[in-house]
Amino acid sequence: MKKATDFSLSSLIFQEISPLKMTSLKTLLFIFFPAILILVAIAMISQIYHVPLNRLTSDPDAIAGINPLSGALSNLGIVLWCAATASCALAAMILRTRGTKKVYLFFLYSSLLSAYLMFDDLFQFHEDLSSTIGLTKGASAISTR
Image (cartoon, rainbow, N blue to C red; front, side, top):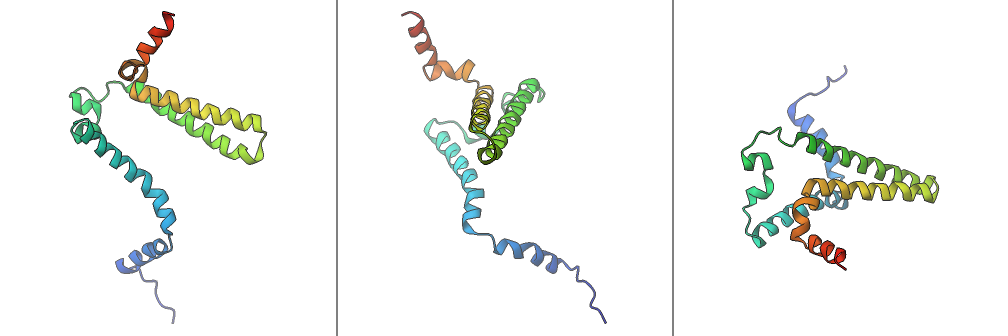
């Protein structure tokens, strides 16, 4: 007589955990290290600049107490910059071994430019941070020469 398939909770858990035991430490570090590094960096920034941690981790709309749809078009633009970055990076990775070097470099540099524009849009380098980090002073010094 054939044994019925066991659908108990314990057998289901064992089936899901068993492949995890074979996961290497290197793979786990590759997955979790960047996330932990970002969290540690945010905590350090909070301590160094005396900014409450919830200010660095909360949504700007929630902090300001404004409508969540504020800046929806800007956020959509950031998502599209991210999609362009990912698409160009993927194309560059594929063409690295299969395509010509010119096409590979085109997609690589396109992904880097899209990433820069995404971060510029996200962190407002062109509006707020440029004067903080001295870009405005440098630009005016160059234009007065």
